[in-house]
Figure 1 (cartoon, one colour):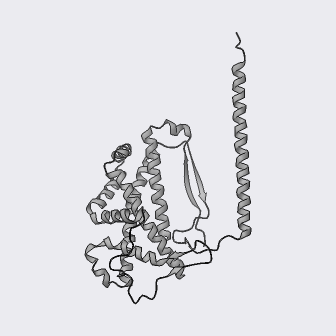
Figure 2 (cartoon, helix red, strand yellow; figure 1 turned 60 degrees about the vertical axis):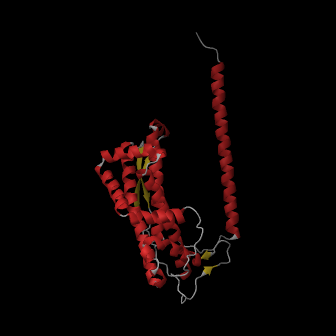
Figure 3 (cartoon, one colour; figure 1 turned 180 degrees about the horizontal axis):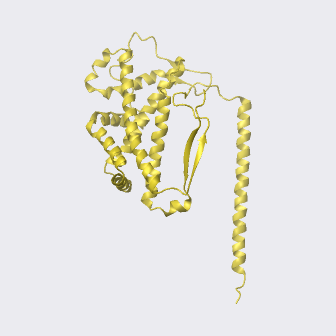
Length: 313
């Protein structure tokens, strides 16, 4: 992998004193919107990496499994995030009020909000699908992955559905389960097509899965842009105490990253080396804490000595 040009990022630092000076609703908004943005960012990046083309069959199917997991989590997180801004929820009234103010003060943020709201209200099928994924796949284990008409996606002429095993504990992968998951996942795309699914060939259901992936990416993009503008306005309004640039010299291009599932575990020698490193870190940590404790005792004793000295007239 050839690294791309150096990437510059801006670091904004807040002192504890400045953060403490903010109103509770401002602190809550910065933390809450920042957390939503972190989730959206990481999940979108990982999902895009999982779209990479891999020539090895086992790794390719492992990547498809990762894609299915991320698709479900991303859909669930989008739904939960949207609830904070558009649903009546007494727990998040401060955040909603602040966002409404930001939208009044910045037309671009207001436009982003309208775009997201329009996407959700005019395309009820989209939010219906996302709600279906969130309720059935995203945050708990499904009661059943086997559809009544098993299997319309996988035909009888399909040679086999693999389960991969390696010599290393943990590197097991059931692509059979991934196929069952995808079959359940694409059912809500179009209720009228449920009966037609039995006639689908491999190309047809792959198109349906791709369609679902594009749908989630599109909604996540609009949702993400909305979060970015809210967070940007918060940073402009409540700027930090220090700002600096940090270069990332080994930043790869977006389409050059590949996550691989199957790997060799560390050798016994490497494991022993890791244990020694952890032990040394633990020792350094204990010494550091002990020195901090002595410093506190010293400060306390000095204060005690000052307090015991007689006052001068």
